[in-house]
Length: 446
Ligand code: NDP
Ligand code: 2IT
Image (cartoon, rainbow, N blue to C red):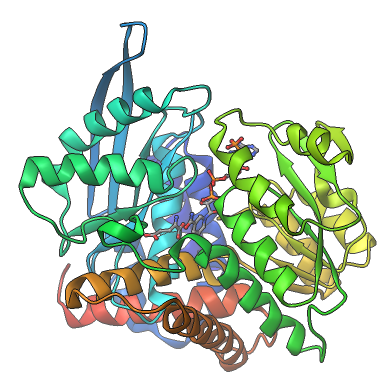
């Protein structure tokens, strides 16, 4: 690693202590950028990377709310406005007990590159809270969302910062957040995406991240002259992204045999199809945080405390959360003869895990490229809101597929151009970086 990159990493670690995920995300990107700095010293002298690792603005606030028994709780709310060089800040909100400032900073940093790859005019941001929806009633979730928005509303807007969903935030939560924003501002605008269809949402947004992951993986398989037809697939998670991915794998003739939760994984050798896919929605909205119920409902095996990576499959789609594929999991996946790993979650594979995939020469795509279909369709929702015209689902789906194919091709051609053919990590990091970096150069010292 060059001295320059090492110096930046050391500074980031010193300035942002106890934020290992943020360090990890920056390390992964900077390793790819070394080749860029060798060829283009102008980015180094303009200190573009040093600027990019520092959020433009960071908002942290108190979220007090009352539970159904009248007890008061205080959670912490965040919004990281990371980079607005190419458009308004854009990115999801995560509600999960594990949320910390460092986790949201890693997600906001990734989002800048991802949004750049979509070809749409969106900057990067992320937010959320350490509030856990697990075991909460609908009314409690509503009161929490209203309190969260009572502070957040003054910092966001359709041309400033447009949040959406992520872990623990789906259409229900977006509804409560949108309702409160509208009351406070007396404005009906596209300030959030992932809205319900009757109040400004886009068709295909709920499915978009998962569909996009599978469209991307389909392009990866094509480079080896094959397709999803007849392939077995391991999916982790059972949330929004997993749900969309399972449906599209089925459409393309593949068979998904696993789902997972924090409690373990289920193995369904007949494939997750038909009513089983609908059941995933019930599982997700039960707020129980477990996948074991699927095994009971459909009489399949459940493996407590284990990950689905021990199952022999052709394709792996990690769709749960960060760092769910460790080095030893990656080795297991390679040993299983898996040919393609395409990430639905953000940073599900550790740096050591990615190294294992690269050394084995299997197809591997990082989330910032392969899961960009969610935010891309959020961008399409923003376009429809601005035009005040909803598009039919076929049109949204076709645009989504085109965007995913374009991102795939950008990764391939950029990796080639910088002398690392087939390396999707370098392709995504470099292409994502160049667009934002050039915009920052154009805009002066920002
Ligand atoms: P959901 O809340 O719908 O589902 C998240 C899934 O991951 C659930 O199965 C959840 O289980 C599980 N999970 C969450 N935290 C943990 C944990 N610490 N350990 C094990 N399992 C966990 O979220 P999404 O499907 O929206 O998000 C999944 C991933 O995809 C995340 O990495 C997210 O950042 C990423 N992503 C989401 C996009 C979107 O548009 N929604 C777009 C692009 C990426 P449980 O609920 O039981 O905790
Ligand atoms: O990680 C992500 O890209 C998301 N959670 C979606 C963000 C968005 O603004 O749609």
